[in-house]
Length: 335
Image 1 (cartoon, rainbow, N blue to C red):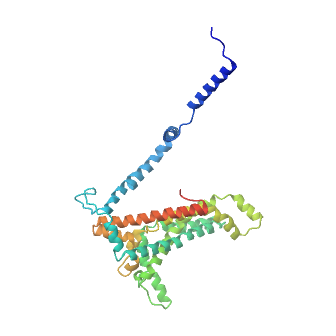
Image 2 (cartoon, rainbow, N blue to C red; image 1 turned 180 degrees about the horizontal axis):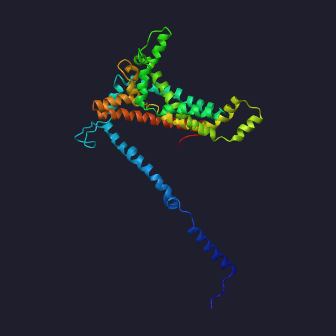
Image 3 (cartoon, rainbow, N blue to C red; image 1 turned 45 degrees about the vertical axis):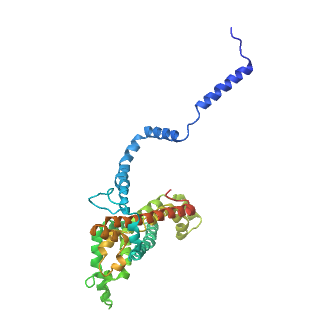
């Protein structure tokens, strides 16, 4: 017959069993734990992942796969030899672009249009949204929203045609008004100094109503008790705007500002190209239109790709810098 265990032996056996159990239940760390969590999440929410699949495929097929062709910028591309059969030339096309006499003109015109559009086009939708938020008459508010939102649906070609008709040297509405005031008619579309203002303010008229919708949605999400408390404290409308409305839409405004700066050099190609003419070319020639003329019209694909890649890299650097600054200043950022 086996001898019974003493109390000390029983305690040691229990401790051994407990240690072995805790060791077997120890959490798995590293890549295997991440993979296990991902599989568990996919089994639970596979319907949501299925809905996400078309969007992922769109970005992979139309955004990430074409990025491989950026290698053309470092080659002398030949249509017969293909992308990978063309000879490598390194940074030859970048050097040609930087040494080109038009480089600083292109960069200056692009920055001028971009910064002008950002400084004017960013605060105006915020002001419109705040003004509409203060309107109590529902019919008037909806009417203003419809009138300001409608120009967004006008295509770029139609918009440029309207601008040309309004600013025609003799029969345009603007010049007719100038002549009625006793002033000589002016060819504004042929003036390089007026090109940036025409481009920016026509864009403000077209896009302000659409951009204000985002801020109106942010204002609608502010807690109404804040306005009630401010009213009890005797705050005026201006004080409510400064202390409630502006802080309430600040996160949305910061995100939109980051995205706008991230595409600073990506000026709208179609509108600028359609508004160009030989008289205003010194102010209207920007990097996207230059890429189009060099790459497609002159079939210099490698040089055009190098210029476009330079443009994209600058935009990416600006996006990262502004995102880091926003994260430090306001704790709101894209990542």
